Image (cartoon, rainbow, N blue to C red; front, side, top):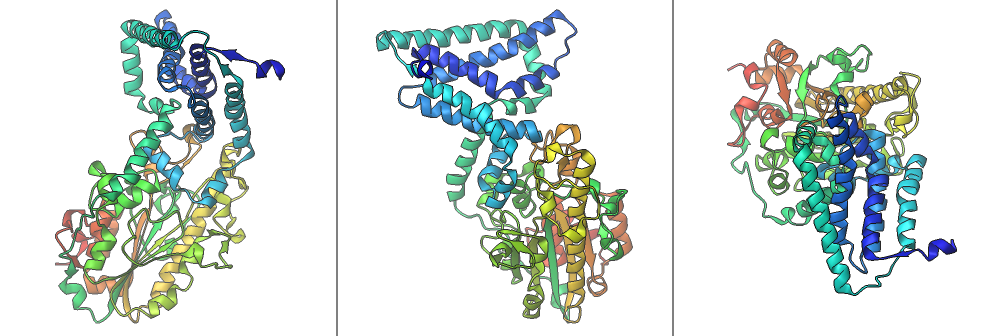
Length: 544
């Protein structure tokens, strides 16, 4: 240790050592993935592969030559090493891609979600890939025996030499790099520390600058149409926003295991070809409640523009949002909302973690007090991972054996899928209970329940777990979502719904979260310029 304490070098060597540490400890996953995409059929390809770590080292050398300044270099490098170790663990263990959306998920995660991600493997990874190289950096003392202007010139020469070598490599291998990146754009998001640094900057800009923009109001002309006004009963629509449910495992859609036994008996219309707006809650939820389709979705605009809940409020509809996930992502900020995790419901909750049955607690009493047309949104925790085994009570442990751990990458595929299927079985029961609760109020209300998930989930397919992959690269498991509608017979009759038409449409036509905004307005017969009939999937099945 005495020898280590006396380690010293000049600032140039410090930069070179730092760049090398980041190549070795922070970017091996990137190098492994890149090399796996190269066809080593020619000597040219072997040489190209050999240049990849060299180019990475030179690029990091340039970056740290600029950033590694006196007084800030050690804290900066140590912080980057520790953060990079954590990022690499999640990329390696779950196959996730790090971008601005993933960083938003990181900063907005709840304590109980974060706790589910803490594992012994994570701590060991942080120690080996973060703490140990950070310790080495902290023990190095930078001593420049030359004048400052000499060292500054040496550093400038170092940067110039790195640039020249990169340009020389580009002269011989530009087409190879261009083809590799163009055809595999996600690998750029595996580069550390640029992936999480750029993602954090983008998130911070959105959070602290974009959200201070003035609120854009929409649907201020909203009012109730003639159909709902003519009803002797009030209309009540419950929208259940699911979490991390993938359509691939819904038996209503043809999955071979019975994950929806109760819903199968309720006469729901199940949309077999439904897709999400994003692959994470922070994108999908504000997107589905906005007027913007996925292709033109602008998160900055959505953060300071009114959405579906505001339009209902403008129309004089009573609204309530009940939350059991990581928040409504801004869409319920201006309407009454309630976090059920704060109600301390012992039957469903343990600490700040509640199962979705808590969303129905006291709902009957609330509905009994309603005197107007109403919309209630129930936001589930659903199948949120990686601790799937915590999302359902013991009696729903039907599919066995299970993966009763948050280290899902260590469970065999059968156990993991069984555990995930049990979460869907519990969602099936919760939705069935919601429908039965609505039936109990049929004497006063025409009732509807709509359910759709925010996004899907990867369960180890192609080495990917969880969700959050950029949409362009996301597998169908993360974008193909369950979407269904249940209507009371009285609602169908009063609003002129052709059920056979709806079932045919649901079985054959592609729909998405883009349809939710106008579908919900149509279900409540709200007239406004914000309503788009072409996106209301019920419109074709209404009697004129």
